Amino acid sequence: MDSQAKSRRRARWTRRYIRSTLTGYAFLLPALIGFLVFQIYPLGADLYNSLFRWTVVSPRVWQGLSNYQDMFTKDVVFRRSMVATLSFVLCVPVAVAVGLLVGVLLNNQRLKGLRIFRTVVFTPFVTAPVAVAVIFLFIFNPTRVGLVNVGLKMMGLKTVSWFRTGTLAMFVLWVAYIWVRLGFNMIFVLAGLQTISPEYYESAALDGASPFQQFRHITLPLITPTLFFLLVMGLITASQEFNLPFLMTNGGPRDSTALINFYIYKLAFEYNRMGYASAVAAVTFVILLVLTVVQWRLQSRWVFYTD
Amino acid sequence: MAGGLTEGWRTAFTYAVMIVLSLLVLFPFYWMVMGSFMSDSEVTSYPIRLVPKRFHFENYTLYFLFTKLGEQNIRETLKVRHSGLEGDVLTWMRNTLYITALGWVGVVFVSAAAGYAFAKIDFWGRDVVFLILMSGMFMPWMVLLIPRYLFFRSLGWVDSFRPLYVPFLIGGGLLVIFLFRQHFRTIPNELVEAAQMDGASHLRIFLQLMMPLSKAPIAAVSVLFVMERWNDLIEPLLYLGGQSRMWTMSLALFNIVRQVGAADMGATPINLQMSGAVILVVPVLLLFFFAQRYFVQGLTQGSIK
Image (cartoon, rainbow over all chains, first blue to last red; front, side, top):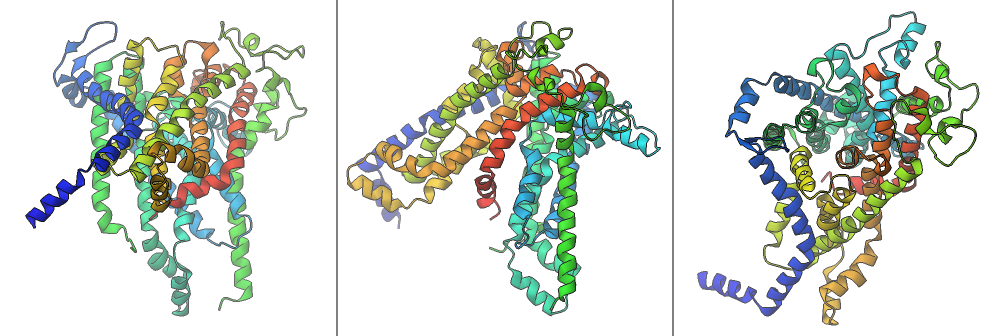
């Protein structure tokens, strides 16, 4: 067995194999160089910088791990930012649930307008964030000028100062974000629903199952891979959201909408605290990694694969 | 088993949901378009005006430097807040297309080459390297953004277009590499082997056989890439922020309605914000409508299973 393996290994390194290896890496070369320069090196540089206090104009000052220490003990804004990010990310399950609901309601291939509808609902997704911010700031303008407020006044209600409290500001972010991402979720749900064989539903209906029962026992289990994908992707993307707080609330009343990437941006590019910003970024990376791994592991608990 | 009556109700209900949802989704767009044609007082009027009394096209011509319709252009209109504003919409569009085109070359060719290697060339360490490359996709972008900025700054590349396209020219795109690999794997190996027996090198196979067969993924990737570059705000902000002549479309609109925080809304008139937003959004929407048939298919094809 061993000599067979050895001869297999020896036989692999033929002239041809060596040549194809060289060719392979030749094809790969630009991508690899780019990867090293623009992904690996920055990662290392970030970790390195996080050990210093550094505004670019003055030399680095060694801090050791005290950046990390201060982050968890002294930095109030960091804590607020974590809370803000968490409250924001909670909109992801909501958005996925809405996408699921809508997808289930509309899961009928013979529907004529479905294609157009899909395009329409997906449109916010390709809209530039700057435009999204402009529109929603107008809609939710806290003075009497905003669309919603004008509508409220027309109904005889009081206007709402949308950005005065953290809850309201976060609500606005939720609305804007869900508006943007709903189409994305819905399309994947629809695609996933179409992989469920209609025979399941037919035989269940023959057995007298109500639509709710069909949903609970057929649709729901079989759609869990799609849901898992949407939740994980959604979590990763939402936790890194920067545009909405930057464009709409500037961190919100007292950091209540200061999502973590927004906070890092401010640290690095407004306060020039490059070292500390790098540390916060590194911590975010680790947290994200851990959460993703945890979700991945938990898959077996609730995701139901048919293959 | 379901009576005709139930089926009818079900369909009607479904259509109702579709229509209501469509209206909700389109509502902000409706306001963006309508508001862009209103005068400032109309947009903010009480009670709500749904349609402008007359269409104020000057809200649009304002953004184009060369129009002489007796109207002032955006530079004059915003003089108080943006003195030194150079360039106009056409300049900014041109800038955006410039960086997109240069980045596109890399994104397509570098990624396709890598994807081809992973799919069709047998070489030592292939799978390991592929995994490492793919893991890079999951890195949070903020972790990379700061060191990249510092790196480009040390090269003196701030206030230039280079940081916006060079990483793509050299590195391609990780997701794109993945997509191309998937695509090339669907092409039967027999084709490659036959070409090799005819004496063709991998390079020739790649250029003359594989690429012509890749029109679909190239188109899909191109559309996605153009959209991403057009809509991106933070990279242009970091590297082009000071130079209004060099702004990209998103950055330009951002600066024109700058500091759009709730307190500052009155700064640039809302109807002008809207027309600027429409100018920003419409090209991408057109591209999207045109390509969406392939776009949606491509997105959902390999992801669920």
